[in-house]
Length: 64
Image 1: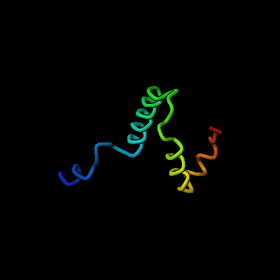
Image 2 (image 1 turned 60 degrees about the vertical axis):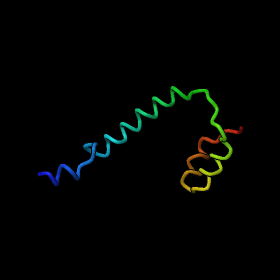
Image 3 (image 1 turned 90 degrees about the vertical axis):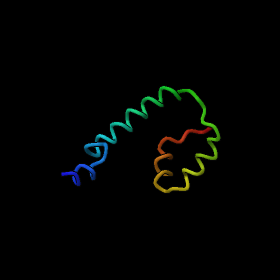
């Protein structure tokens, strides 16, 4: 029915969305590899305000 098809998004399921995100991140990683992030100190401080992000970032914390 038309109602069923209009409620369904462009992706058949949630896994499809994550696959697209993964592929895009891989593409961007190749492009940005070795580059410095502009205003990284400001970005990092803003991310650290979120408790969950703070815990994740502590796992990969590198002294700059």
